[in-house]
Image 1 (cartoon, rainbow, N blue to C red):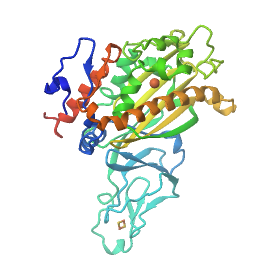
Image 2 (image 1 turned 120 degrees about the vertical axis):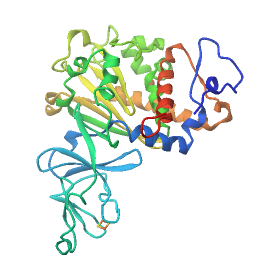
Image 3 (image 1 turned 60 degrees about the vertical axis):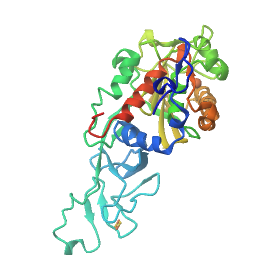
Image 4 (image 1 turned 30 degrees about the vertical axis):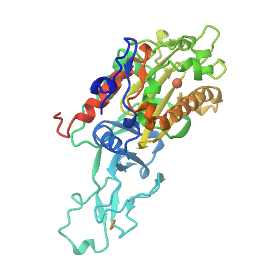
Amino acid sequence: MTTPAADGDSGAELPESLIPTLAGYTYTDPSVFALEQERIFEQMWFCAVRGADLPKPGDFRTVQVGRESVLVTRSRDGVLRAFLNICRHRGARLCTEETGSVKRNFQCPYHAWTYGLDGKLVAAPNLTSMPDIDRTEYGLKPVHLREWLGYAWLCLAQEPPSFADTVQADVVQRLGSLEAIDNYEVEDLELGRRITYDVKANWKLIIENFMECYHCATIHPELTEVLPEFADGYAAQFFVGHGAEFGEDVSGFTVDGSEGFDRLGGVESDQDRKYYAITVRPQVFINLVPDHVILHRMFPLSEDRTIVECDWLYSKDVVASGRDVSRSVELFHRVNQQDFDACERCQPAMSSRAYADGGVLVPSEHHIGEFHEWVQTTLAQTKDGER
Ligand code: FES
Ligand code: FE
């Protein structure tokens, strides 16, 4: 993967204000996407499932992580576990549904090998006549799972990277400390609303868009009403610990600036009336406002298609009381639609000859260059970490 600056064949020297983006083909080439699947999504912690979506033993969800289908389920002991969604007999996909619930086990629809909720092989036709088969050895292949912020984060790597040095480090780098997010008590919040977006764009376009606010004045009229500093194209994600202040006449983070709900449990006064956006590589956005949290999980399916699941999380009291969350949902739903429309507008252009050498980043977008560098460095690494 090269940029005009890196390969030097694009000719023109860039003025100081501009730095290059990645080249167009990196957003359209299936072989680049395959490498990203292998070296990014199958190596890093991947935020997959909200734990509360699987409240009882046997509840399950299947998710696409890199090139693998992963089955996440709650075992009899109440613990969330994840497995490759592949039967150990002849490789049939075990669960074809995206969500569901089984009573006590998963049975393969091909020859009926049957696995317990802990992944162990518990039954198969004629299994008793094959006493040499070790039921753990021929159980489902486990996938690393870690719960944080109420979500199951999965890692397909043999040796997962340190959670603290990757996922949590991204949060600390943005907020200045882990306590700053702990104050929102995200793991105790409840789902008020979920909207799933099927975005016809490469996952990197969605990340790049989330990282800058140069576009805010043009495409986010409602958001810039609530957060006036965003109208200046301000790089809110760039300054450690900085939260964007609500406008003077704004009462809450809602589509019309009307009042929201009580401040979440531990939110400090210096976090009140502020919005914080965090990008957790490679596929999560966390948005913090005093009375709710909005968390996006991206599921990159191909070089030009990404499913985004967006959760709006509120205090238990707000959800239990049935209070109307629609004004706060509507604000970020519009932001999402505006952002994803922009990404979809860029995607077809990535394969144009006009973009063969990529585009440029203005100063308030220069930090996106670090993301590009990270992608390039990560893709250049071989499996054992050597470059
Ligand atoms: Fe699953 Fe045969 S492939 S039981
Ligand atoms: Fe935006």
